[in-house]
Image (tube, rainbow, N blue to C red; front, side, top):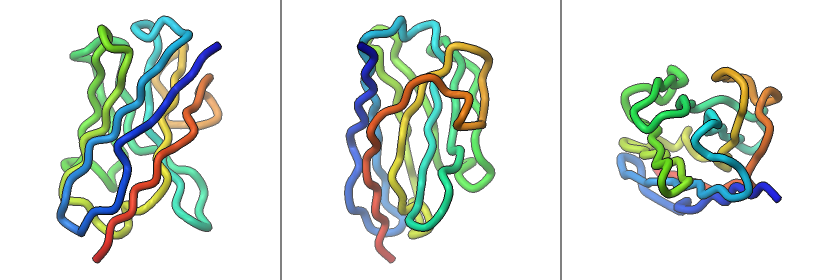
Length: 124
């Protein structure tokens, strides 16, 4: 059974930082491309970042987070991270990690597996 479990969310003041983790099990983590998405109240889920298979792999970010967020992965720990700096109130959302076997994608419906999400709240 495939499981993706996010952690690390919480309440932070604007300008602060958080690191989200997504630990996976039940899949061969090193062959999956990983992504982070987020969904704010009343809005559709949106792409945040994605990383290719390798630890030093290709990364791609949404314009809204470029330069502030960093996605990374540890294939030995079956975990993907999202390092978030200079957080803004508009970053408030439930953050989801997802795994995709085929080519990297910024489209959520193309991902194969999803976590349950972790809440990030940024106060002004």
